[in-house]
Structure formats: structure tokens, C-alpha cells
Length: 370
Image 1 (tube, rainbow, N blue to C red):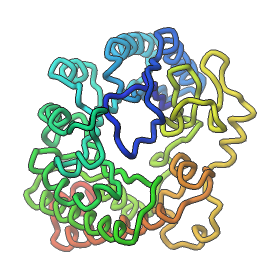
Image 2 (cartoon, one colour):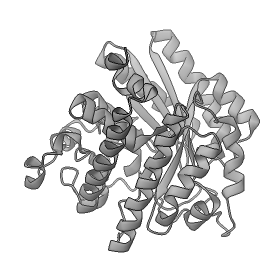
Image 3 (cartoon, rainbow, N blue to C red):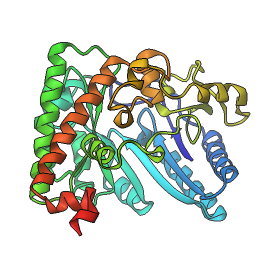
Image 4 (cartoon, rainbow, N blue to C red):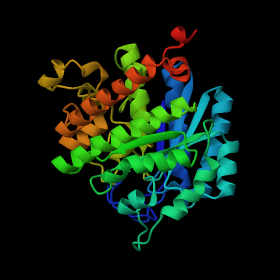
């Protein structure tokens, strides 16, 4: 199973697009963290083999609770060793507090780290500033030195918003020049996208695709999530079940108070709204959880007739809920994004395939490369 522990509602930044709800000083007590880990292990064992568990630390800003993160990790490692469970550990951080000692400890414990940094300073400062309004870019970017190169155990997460969309291409190129080889471009779907902003969005993705192609020609192991993901759906003719999130079933988030949500995106202020499906001390509300799970999917009639439906993320319950208020109904801006990313990724694939780029073939068509 995939469990996320939301260690705190507090954060030292005030990002314009944050979906994590209001910022206040509520932290996860040790008894909640411990019980959350026990809950995760118990439910992993109930599901039976293969015994695998992924535990992520989230916030707010989880590095504000560094001692709890360390203690929880060490307790978790003991529990999974006892039960012979395969463990993956992840951390999502704004990187402003991440120092060498943190990076070394995280590396020693085999963490995969997501650094939320919005590219170059112009793009980053448009949306990600400290509480007092000052730039956070230099503070965040100090952490890049620990995650450079194609074998880095982490990625840079760039959030795209109408306020910074014009800088996508420059930011992807800047990150590439910093030897960052794993980039996730995450749109803010929960806002208004004007026609002008949509045009800039496409232009930025096309410029990012150019950087992607350049890296393959160097050659260098390089990844942009939407390009890799959509090429994969082209090769395998759609998303496989293992590619999709397991919203509320094999994927849950645990709030600082111990409430359970289907995804960390839905915890927000932890006001126990309609997406709360239980508590780690009392267990799942089984009937209500089942009701939520039955609603997963997509009831859009247009989607059923769309030729791209198997390659589209219309199944993402948290994005659907955030944009339309229904986990099974897709918003128009998500549809626009999916069509755009599929088209651009297909153009990238066609160009690199036509020139028989050896690294591209080895990555996506290994049988042809051999």
C-alpha cells in the first residue's frame, strides 16, 4: 500500500497555488505517527503478498518536523524488517530547510525526494515566496547540489500556474543546465486559465519538449514526467492498472490528527469533510469508504467516445474532485491538458524514433534497439 503521513499543517512559504489548505501550527504527535505506521503495516499484511509498502512524508513543510520524520522512519524500518515487507520511502519538501546533513541522512535511508522548486528565479518567485514576501529561490536551490545527475534519487517538481506559465521553457532549460535530469511539471488545475494563459502553457510545453530532445541527443538520461508518461501510453496502448493511482483503496493519506483521506491532496485543513474515510485509531468507515470507492472512474459521456480515453488521466479522483467536486467527473481544463500533452509527447516520440536515437529506443523500444 501507499501511505502518506502529513506531519504538519505549518509551512515557511506561502505559495499562491497551494492545495494543502490553511497554514497553522498543528503538528503530528508521536502517538499519531506511530499508530499511522502500525496501521500501514497491519493493512499491508492483510492484503497479502507481495508485501510492499510505500510511506511518504508530506505537509505543510515536513522538514519543520525533522525529529518526528527521523523517529518515524527508524520505527517504520524496524516494523517492515520484522514482517519482511519491501519498503519505499518518499519525501516532498520545498527544500528551503534541506541541508547537507539532511540530504546525507535521507540518502542513507534510501529516500526518494521530491523538491518543489518552480524552475528559474523569475518563475519560482512569481508563486513561491516566504511568508514575509521575500524570495525563497536561493534557499530552495541550495538543495539542488544533492540531487544532480541522471542517477539522483529524486526529482524537481515544478508547479505551473497562470502567474508563472510564461517561464516554463526557460525554467526547464535552466534546470537541465543545473544537471537536473528528472523533472515533474504539475499544473494548477484549480484556477482560471484564460485563452492567453492556455496558449503560453502550450508554448512552454513545446519548449520543454525541445530541451527533452536535446538531452536525448547528447545523450543523457533525462525525464520530463508528462513526456515519458504519454510516450509510455503510446507504446503500451494506454495506462495499465499499475500506472493508475489507487485512490482510497491502496493509497491513503493520514492527517496530523490521524484522520484518513484517499489522497494527500484532499487533507487540506483536515476539517473531516466528505472525503474523510476514517481514523487510524478507529479504522476505516467501511461502508462510507466502499461508497467512495464505487464512485471512482469517469462518467463523462464525451470521454467514452474519445479516441484518447485510454491514454488520458480522466481516472484521477483527487484532481477530478478538486476541479469539479466529483471524483468521477472530469473538468475541461484537465481534458485540454491531456490532449495537449499526448500530442506533444507523440511529436517527440516520432522525431526521436525517426532518427533511430539509440537512447530513446533503449528506453521505450528495447526490442528494436536489440
